[in-house]
Amino acid sequence: MTLPDRWNERWPDYNGGVWYKIVWNWSCQEPAVLDQSIVFSINYLNSAGAVFLNRDLIWSNRHLEEPLSKSWNMPRYWILPISGLRHDQNEILVYVRGYAFQSAGLGDVSFQNVYNSYTEYQQQIWDRRTLFVINAILSATLGVLCLVIWLFRRKEVSYGWFALSCLLWLLFVSNIISTETYPFPNTVMAAQANIAFFVLYILSFIVYLLRFVDKKFPILEETAFICSVAVILGIFVTPLDYAQTVFGLVFLGYSLLFFGVFLYLLRLTFRVPRVENILLVICLSLIIIFAALDIALLAAPFDTDLKPLSPYTSPVVTLFIALILGIRTTKSMQKIEQFNQQLEYRVFEVREDLKQSMSEKHYLELENVRLQERIHLSHDLHDGLGASLVRSMIMVDQSEQPMSNRQFLSILKLLRDDLRQIIDSGSSIGAKVPETPVLWIAPVRHRFSQLMDEVEMRATWNIASEWVVQPTPLQCLNLMRVLEESLTNVVKHSQAKHVQVTLDFPDEQTLCLSIQDDGIGFDTHGVLDHGMSIGVRSMKLRLARIGAELKVNSTPGYTLIKAILVVSP
Image (cartoon, rainbow, N blue to C red; front, side, top):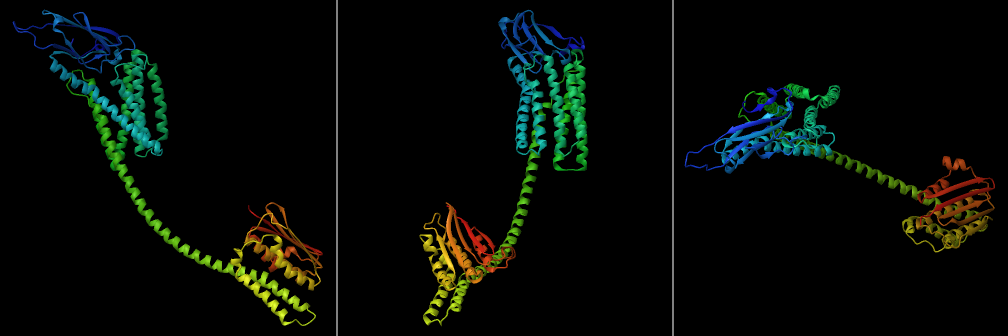
């Protein structure tokens, strides 16, 4: 036979073990001696095996029974000891155990010196293992990078699909790197899982390509996933005699599916020549060219010195993905800069609008303050000076004898004091609250007691002796204005014979001031709802300003005005 040998061509569907016997000899011209050790090397053996020199075992795979070890991806060489060689004829036996669907057999063998064998061995390790390890490392790095991007930006689904495809590619490539079938129980199941990983990898990578160009085909994608599940189930139930045919058809079918998506992307790129799409098509073109050349090398009936190009696909993908990410990052930065400029201009516009609005608001607030001051002044004049004027008019009107200058002067001084209190109401607000309710209400009681005596009106004052809860100066001032306005209305309009003023504390936080008389009463509905009385409306506004409540109840012979204030601790 000639090497490399695949026994499936000679014994179709044979699964088991085969022995290869290599008979050789060496000689040196006397008196020369062998100056270097002889090295025997095997390019590969598929799948597991052992080597014997003159019937002595010099090497063996770890597992020669299921689960078989894998040596088809591992070149090997042995330095043959001169003392163990015969001068006439030597024999090397190579035992190989494998499966027909995996093209079991023996690769090239050679006899060389140490230096040449070691150099060739290092080159084979680089081509058949190191490049794939680098491929796996780059794929894992890209996968983790895209996974992190997807985790932080879930709407970037293309990165998530690419991360998944990198994981599946790692599982697929691990068949080349590993020398054992672990964690699978046997070689057949390991091969079935490997082709299943290939199917899932192609599917996820195709979805990634479609999402990269912002395309979705829900019905086609769902159909492809359902068919793939059926294909994977079929892979695991395929009889061993048909495994090679089924695996080959599955590999060819999904390769054609990938090629079809590539043609679609090529057409789309010609229609919409975006830089990212062009780079992606170039990357895919190189991958397809490398894969086609490697498939041709595997199918070649003769041996060749050409090296496989598939290990170089990952560096190519890494390069183009880096370019694409760089372009996308640049575009994103440009969008951010443009957005910042627009935002800055918009902020300037809003700031100018806000400045104008604030100016208008400030003007309106000034006008409102002026209006409020006028309203407060009118209420103070009505409740304070107005009440004093009414009281003075009643005193002059009820006087039976002409009033002396001293009496007029006293009246004018009272009016002056009321006017000064109105002018200095701000300072009055900040004044100190009297020590007891009796001291607080004493000035009002003094003024109205004299007036009520002149109109023959009896007054009863029920005032608490101590503050259960003390109001603020502003609350005291407004309550006093309410009391003055109420008593003025009683004297002026009620025709009452008796009036009762009560200040008590229903609980530890409530102050209640009530004025009750037995006069003719008034229409509370018209006064409260239709604003027919300026005095009552003024009292209501004053109490609302300090958070108090006004209650009015009036019928002929009974009128009650009550101010209820809840004082915070």
